[in-house]
Amino acid sequence: MSTKLTDSNTLFLEGNTKFYVPKNSLIQTPPPRTPVFFNTMAKFKRNLLISIFNSYASQSSHKLTFSDTLSGVGATGLRLANESNYVQKIYFNDANVNVSELLQKSINYNNLDSSTEVSINEANKFLSNFTNRDTRFDFIDLDPFGSPIQYIDSAVRSLKINGVISLTATDGAVLCGVYPKVCLRKYGSISLNTEYFNETALRILLFSLASISSHYELGIKPLFCHTDKHYIQAYVQITDSISDTEGKIGFLGHCSTCQNRVISELPILSCNLCSSDNKIAGPIWTGNIFDKSFLNIAINNTDDSNLLKLYENALFESSLPPLYYVTDNISKNLKISSFPVETILLKLKENNFLSSKTILHSTGFRTNANIEEINSLLSKISTSNI
Ligand SMILES: [Zn+2]
Image 1 (cartoon, protein in one colour):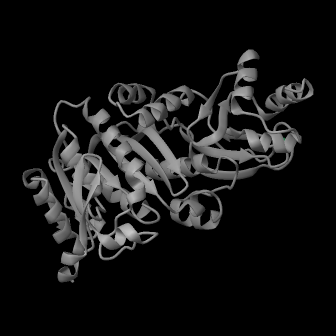
Image 2 (image 1 turned 180 degrees about the vertical axis):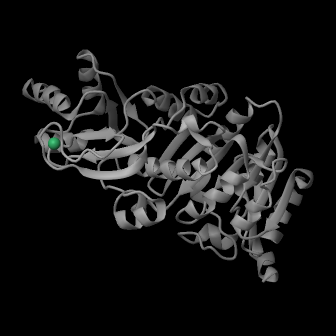
């Protein structure tokens, strides 16, 4: 198997790091899982992880250990080892035996032997080797194909108190409400397909993490969340305070007649605006999905203009209510022509409502106004023919 690898690899540059990848992974779409998986499209995601790692590590008194739990070619861990000043040691792991030789070549090329370790193991078995108090990780990346749910328990047990888990799910159809019964079976929560589908998905993922962490009386504190069309991702600190989770698990009710939405501790079965039946999703995480003080640290620690914009926008929306609105859907429902999101933000502010764009949707916004109030403001705009 390993002889096949020798002629089929190429040196690839991403960020400031060169590493070996199978040529097949660069020419086939989507990249094949064999001989070793590598996704060139995930560059932004890796840039983000490095930035979050550096921001988190900048607040620590020591250098950090990092688990590249399902490493593939090791792009994330190699880049961290090479580009971050805060790395104590990177632990690579993959179940694919082909990874070992390829990764060792990249480690040798970058002279990273003393700050890295490679193992070939099933991810849960690998993580279980690090559950002793003195061997736990500072930062764990869980980025599998599909759902990360089967690895969360092992990750929580092998993470230091106040350490960070980067959790990625690519089973969007399950979490976003296309398969609510599968979601209930896997994540213990019913999903719902709405205009804010990715926020519900994030909140279900966070609920699952909070639920598993609470088995050990541990709390969760989401630092930053992000989605794109291929994945849902949450960076979450695991704390020793269960009170960080208490009162932050609940349900959402969505009225498909008037588009009203509500979050509550127990399900609310009918719409408080039009009395139609609500569709119910949950349990979900109802607490914050962005941490203000962490975002300020991240803003001060990055010079990447794309990431800076992302953090700054997240900071604006971090204190606004859950479940964003989408301008295109509102204009469609009101049968008025579409309008830029800035128009409604301005109108809401003029009428003393809080409002902000959201990083979760390009034409989405958050506000403390309800749908009746939003519609009323927009009808006035529409009749004044802006
Ligand atoms: Zn309603």
